[in-house]
Length: 236
Image: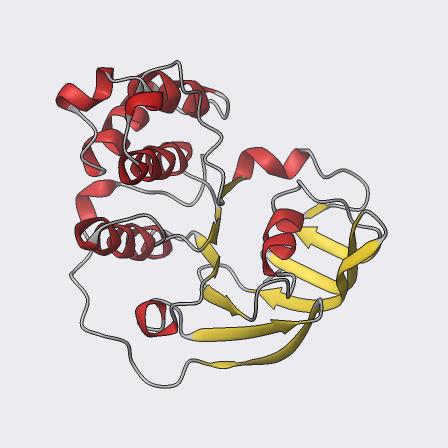
């Protein structure tokens, strides 16, 4: 079976600097992989490359069957990137933001409503402008956008940042639900103790290259069971 992510000698530049300096990586469908490495190692650029947002300067990058060297826009509706920036519209309400981004990939209103309910954003919060939300509520709104889009590939950059304990546990359940439904997850995280129960494979990145790739060492902490009612699917 063709891997969801296939990178060979992949180079991506920030200006003239090679943020990725020749990455080799394959990720199979349904896998959850955690990227580890120091700040500036290239983890965020790797996620952005897979999302079709960072340009491929040389090498090979095929994501969900799309050759990013030829066209990096076609893959965008099939992936969901949760980065440090939420890309939400402050003047729009929570409901308007989630609905807008869901419609961008032709998801329907029910997807948006279910996502907001799962993230605790229904009721009063649905009608609050994003600019008035706390940092944690904004993060939940960004997660609701990702869930409503039902991406085949989840790309998460420090996804637990800004969430309280309930939000972190909820995110863990979302990730489990997504992979159980056939989606693939690649996340960058410094919190190995937190994510090793979610990701059986750890890929170490340093200097813009993959320096190690191995199973996670030992099980993580006991996690809450995933909610099968979420209905996350691996394709829109």
